[in-house]
Amino acid sequence: MPPHRIFTTPFAAVYPLYVQKAERKGRTREEVDEIIRWLTGYDPAGLALQLERQTDFATFFAQAPAIHPHSAMIKGVVCGVRVEDVQDPLMQRIRQLDKLIDELAKGKAMDKILRR
Image (cartoon, rainbow, N blue to C red; front, side, top):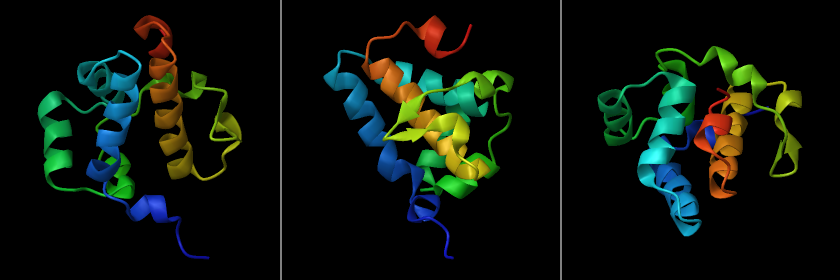
């Protein structure tokens, strides 16, 4: 079975959609970036470089400096899929990021989104 299409999609192609979703609900690009950096361990320059290079999702997560240890606490349903039940590790990371952005758009406090 071929890999899922999202794995080869450039992260930079989806990033603006994350930002738009957040901004439509009164949140900011900076909050989106904070969530991405929290999950992946990228610093601002590293995230900007990944966006500039048009890195695909598989590479984006493979090169992530440090997946946050509390990422296992990300639970719930996003796009009809229960995040904690996703078997493929890469797809689970992508769904975790989707879930965090959903929580941001729904107005949840950053401390709760970042599992502090």
